[in-house]
Length: 196
Image (cartoon, rainbow, N blue to C red; front, side, top):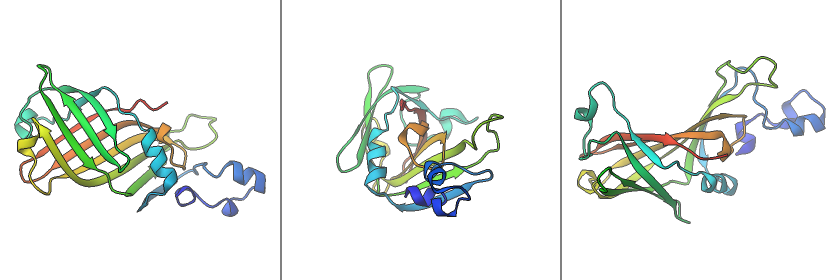
C-alpha cells in the first residue's frame, strides 16, 4: 500500500538513492483516495493508534434535539478503548454521573486512505504536508446506555485525521471522528489521538 499512496521511486526524476529516500515525499498538488484490503503493515500501524481519554459529542445548531439513540445529554464522556486481535474496537464511555456504555466496532480489513495537498506548507519546507484521513466502515453493536439505540444493521464510520507525507503512518493521525447511524441511531463523537 505504501507504493500505492505515493509515486513509484522509478517515476521520480532523481538519482536512485535520492528517489529511494524520498519514496514517501508528497508532491505539490498531490491528491489520492485509495480503498484496498489492509496489508500487515497497515494493520500494525492501526494497532499503534491510541485514543485520547475524552470523547466529545458532536452537536450542530440544533443541539441534542437533533440526536437519535443517545439518551445522555453530555457534551463529553470519559473514554477508554481496546482493539482485539481480530480488529474489533471497543470504545467504553463513562458519563458525568458514572453511567457506562460501550460501542463495539467490527473494523473491516478494507480501508480507505485519503490525502490532499492544501497548499499551506511553511515557506522553505521540503514539500507539501498533506491533509490525511483513514476511513473504516462497518457494523456497530452497543451496550449500556447505547443499547436501546442500536438496532440490527446499525452502521459506523470511523475517520482518523491528520497531516503528513504520502506514506501511511499512525503517528500522522491526531484526531478522530465516529458517526453512528441506523434505524434508531444518529449521533457522532470526536476526539484526540495520543500518537507521538
